[in-house]
Image 1 (tube, rainbow, N blue to C red):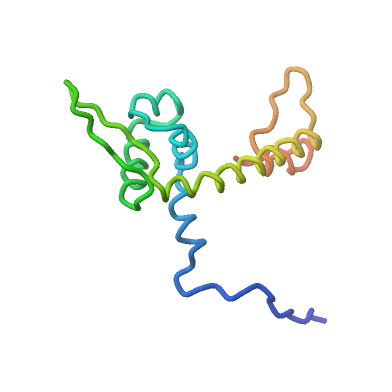
Image 2 (cartoon, rainbow, N blue to C red):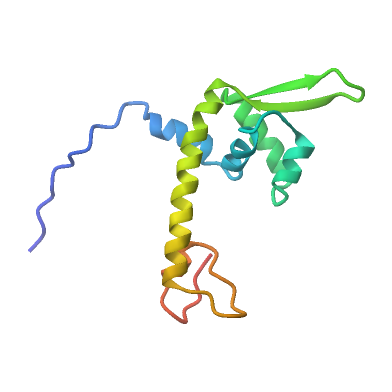
Length: 143
């Protein structure tokens, strides 16, 4: 016998969903990291590269341009010789910081739970993410 479909009690999603709009901005690869480091004040490209060494210069450039286009950061060319560029969160970008911090706090909790589920054995690296820690023991988790 099929289960009865329950009525969804969540509010109806607006026509232009603001959640999707926000996630389109912060959901890009490395974007939360960029916002995280810019919350401390203006940073030059080379400083961001040092802050996030895993990101390629091409991806960092792309993300910075996207954040500038959607109105989250300001790009300022400094009148130096040679010219340098600084990036800074504007007022709208600053409003994203509490959301990024909240996501980071949940991430810490997920890491603690994953560590409790699969404690590290001497010489064995910890699993990279929570989903992999949920895999069956002995099974290779897809990453």
